[in-house]
Length: 108
Image (cartoon, rainbow, N blue to C red; front, side):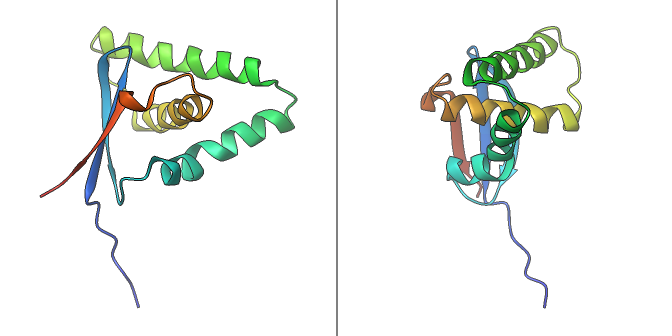
């Protein structure tokens, strides 16, 4: 039996006061998105031997690159957007990005 999960919410992500992208999601719990995309990224960083500060620097650098692409009106590939999503929620979890910089809206 196949159960279809509907994307009832849309996540809007802002970085440096600019909308970077929208993402369809099932719920409005950012911790679920963090567990799905970002937790494994932080864990892999520790396995590779990176400290918190080194990981934060890498995440911020990647987010800055995507922000630069967006600011210069370049298309962001979906793969890069998912990587941005992972880095973004790593930074949220590590208290580098405020909880006010993303927004969940319920779809009608």
